[in-house]
Image 1 (cartoon, one colour):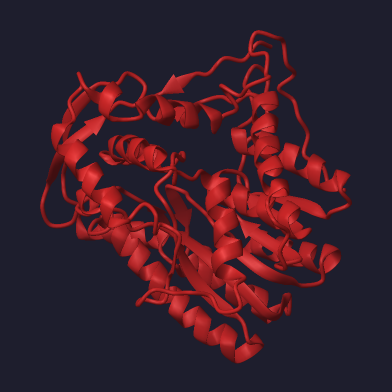
Image 2 (cartoon, helix red, strand yellow; image 1 turned 45 degrees about the horizontal axis):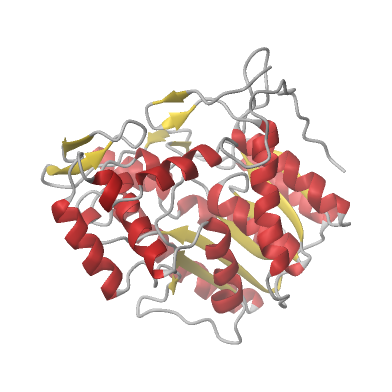
Length: 395
């Protein structure tokens, strides 16, 4: 079939297999061009198929020569429907990694479940023995608790008071004002259950109990803080409460791993980037389009792969990992520079639908969004027939 992007709201409902493969290849080429470093050799990535998780897997494999296992929940092609982007990304990654003699195995299923955790442990024992790095990069709107069976749904809302500000439809360019009603107490509770640290805690305890964490193993979960503009709906909203829980979990896991295996657990606060998750948050796409404009002009813009390489090279595998006052890794440091935020604030106060193309980088946002699904990659013929059926196989 000929595959063109199908956009519905803030999501793309299809993906291009050759485009996704090229997107993965671009990231691999970037990593191969960087200085070789000492780092992890056997890595588990939970949430490995897109965004920061995919970049983490690529960086580990092609930057450190690491064998990897990835866990995710993705959709294969069916009849006239393409597979999800994460499915195609993983197929391309596995092919490239195995061509270089690396172990690259994947488990497709509900990472919140006890069954997938136990399947992963069995695969680690079979293929790797132990792992020395666990990346936790899950982003899901729903979770079913593996012990109680209760189902939770997350929401992106402020707490206590409604929040009103500018937002943009990033496909049409329409700038409008949006008001988001405050969350109920139960919505806060459910969002923490989905996006907080409980599942990460379950994973690490299960891996530790099974003896598959190597001596000195590290684990990292990803987070975001962002600017004052987005605080009411992000850091001070339901997601922020979830991230607070995630950070508290990191401190508890860090004490556990230090005691048991001389290991480390830490949260990495990353830069605002175009992801499937960030595209769903009101206000954030407009902020990102302004941020991109400023950071590109200053020559300090990074995508996911550049961010994660810097996380590994300049933070996680330095002789001593630099942490902020709350014990977090900060690779949002360039985004949060005072000069960057001052310029973004100034643009925010001036932005209208009429001047957005001049003051912001909405076109860059759109391009990055489409690339997530394999569209807009150079060298890919999007008018050609392509087979959407790409298998994922065990080596």
